Length: 70
Image 1 (tube, rainbow, N blue to C red):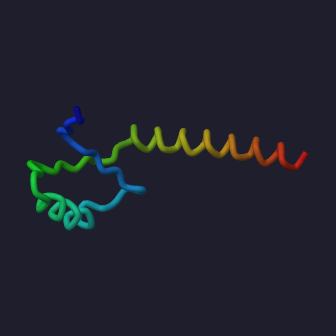
Image 2: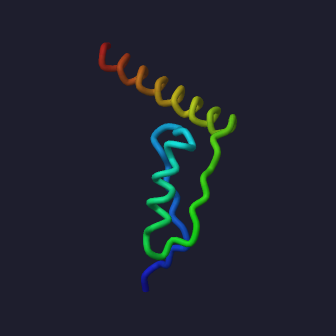
């Protein structure tokens, strides 16, 4: 038996302005079966999570580079 989805989440590679996203939102609304499209406003929590993840990846990358140099 196949799974049934009730929603899909789209995540942008970086924050975009609301006026730039308007065309994307309207295009998604035109897809058959789409009931609604609700934007998610970026906030300090998402910025903190992004910054922590970026720092963690950076530290791990430097560890690997130091191992290669040795």
